[in-house]
Structure formats: C-alpha cells, structure tokens
Image (tube, rainbow, N blue to C red; front, side):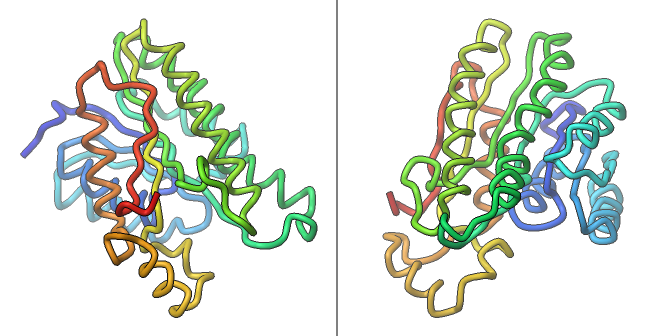
Length: 243
C-alpha cells in the first residue's frame, strides 16, 4: 500500500542494520529514496536495485562519508525536494578515554554529530519550500545515561539529543518536526564487538529479555515520519524497558 503519495526520504547509513531496515519499510510505504553508505557500495547498490524492483519506487544509492562536509553537499546536489531526513549513520568506539586519540574522538564527533549539522543545514531549505518536513535522528540510550568505556559515543549521542530538542523549537513555526529515537541494544553489526556471552548478559538485564530487532526501530521511525504534526522535540526511547 502506497501511503506516501510519492514523498521523498534520505536515509544515511543504509547498507546495514537500522538504516537498511528503515529503507525497506519506507520503500514499502511508497517513499522515493536516497540511500547513503561509506564503504559498502556493492551491498547498497544491489539492495537499492532490489527495493526498486520489489516496490516500484526510485532509489538512488550514493557513497558518502557523513562526517565530511563536501560529501554531504554532494548528496544534496542530487536532491530537488525532500520530505523526510533520517540521520542514521553512526559509529561506536569502546575503550578507556585515556587510551583514546584526538583523531578517534574527532572522528566519532564528525560521523555522529557533525553529520546532523551538515544534513539538516542542507535539508531545511528544501523543507521550507513546502512548509513541511520531518527530521528523525537515530540516537542511543547512552546519550542520556552515559556508558563506561563509550564516553565519546555517549557524548556524541547526548549532543544529538540536545541538537534534536533545540532544532525542533527553531523549526516548529515552519511546520517541520524534529524527533529522535534513542535505541537500546539493537541486534546489528555495531554490536559485533561484544561476545555472545556479553550479549546474553545484556539481554538478561533488559526487561523484554532480548535485544531489539532493526525492523522494530525501522517501524518506529516510519511512525514518526507519519505522526501528528504536534509531536516534535521528543527523544523516544526504544529499549525493551531497560531504562
């Protein structure tokens, strides 16, 4: 069923995990898509082709480092219109803060937080043309709670949460809604650094007694794209009751 009336969405970090699942549900809803990834263009190209054939929607795959201003400018050179921006691209880093290099710190901030600045700055004028739009940022429970051994990641997601709330206030008069989904432990490749025992231990701490599925995050993101206009400036937690 085509619910979008040919609306357009840009989904960053769409070659795997939450981004890939989100692209699937948005394609199913009839959105015209632009998808990005940094390193997995073979996978993204074949995935985009499958979405086009299965759902009969245009789907443009683009290679981009979302922490690079010029790469983001290149993405927007392909877009004449945009209804929904989903800032999903992100990276994690585990280790003691004292062992972290300045380069590692700045890289995480660039990919997780600077990227939101670059994409929103370019997306807002396109949305203002229509006096409507949705910006959805994929955050983490660590943005509010903080995680030992993940200080930079937690700080970047905390920044994303504040960015979301502030930009929502700025854009509310223009009928552009800005919200974030703060994910708990979702079963994606980002958690491959954890051993099966660690993951089992994590699942045992979660009241839902399991990890979240990328498809669950994707469905929530689609709901936010179609939610009432009065819903804005919210950080919505998806964590199985963990926090």
